[in-house]
Image 1: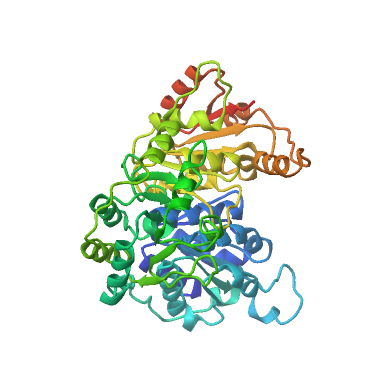
Image 2: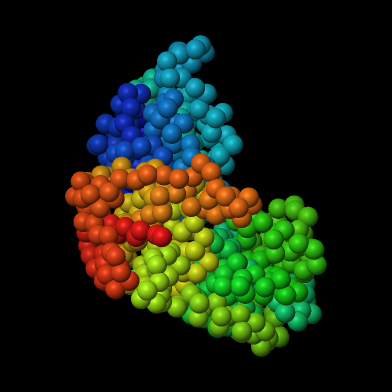
Length: 524
């Protein structure tokens, strides 16, 4: 057995099913070790696509997704997807090859200091410069990647280490480290603060979904009547069918949800990361009582300075808080709830031009509650985040930490492998073409998901912001191929509806199909 064999045996011990990546000369021993293992190596068309696949796979399963790239340009191409996982708190282990140790002390072909390059976007990384440290390093990489708050880790294996004989065994996989129960004093203080509030509200963040705390959060809001507003990555923590749901921050035709949190005098932040949504926007004058409930202490921030921090397992913290609170509030923002949900569900009039906003009720109707929607980044993401009702946790995947364009199509590949439900990806023309080559990966793997391309021949979100600031836009216009013909060249069935009726029929047929489908929606 050599170092590469041990590395792959360690991956097997971590129950890794897929490794997404590109081959490279320095990875030869690793690739042949994967060939002889129980793990499926998925060659992708770009390293960024591989990293996004590992990112979304980790977010959907809670187990670290694994991506693989060679040295130099392979590693730097991987970087964006690794950074996305880092800021979105998605468990991911990146593995990169490297030249032999004997040439790394000098300038060398394709050689970069990858370990230091990755330091800013991972929780931990190291070079496997000795076969004797491989088993410990792999176990540490997975433990840290999956430990709350999860994120990315990175291992670099030089080609000579991969080829060196070794006699060692993988370390046994252990259960994830669990946070202790909350301390009674913090729960009592939080309950007292809530009891003094007239207009409390829950702000559900990424952690409320990521830690499987939705069941306890739903019990809390049903028991107390406290309304819930979510971040973009907290969608589905409480079902948008609930009377307590205000969907997400900035939802509603006149930002009723934002108005509700503005009126609130007490905010219970559950699994909230300030990277998701700047607290200055919902607590501008720092007048709100804030209760922080999370696995980690709150970030130090002038506009997010909680009166009490319940640092514990989120589900158990919610359970203890539910038991400690005696008050029941009549939902004080029912009007906002009704306006937000009515607007989100309104279907378009027959003569309305195509828009993302009015497509969403039709798409929601075509999808089951547990089907998964993955949004790319762009103006369509804002509409989906604010106006697409979500009924189950982890069924609407939005990148809002790094918020990188290009995640949707590779994310669809990962989701199709990770879940049994139907998968839909929504992207703009800009984000789609960044990783559209992964359609070939999808068809090679016999995936069956739906790609919706909103086409406005523009980097639309940037245009919108420029016009808001200056009244005009520059540097955003694009030209595009025939997307239907492009998809069909990969063997993907495609359609370009011209009416709302045709669009509704196309979405139902696509979502229910077991085949790859692309639906292009031309925006006016």
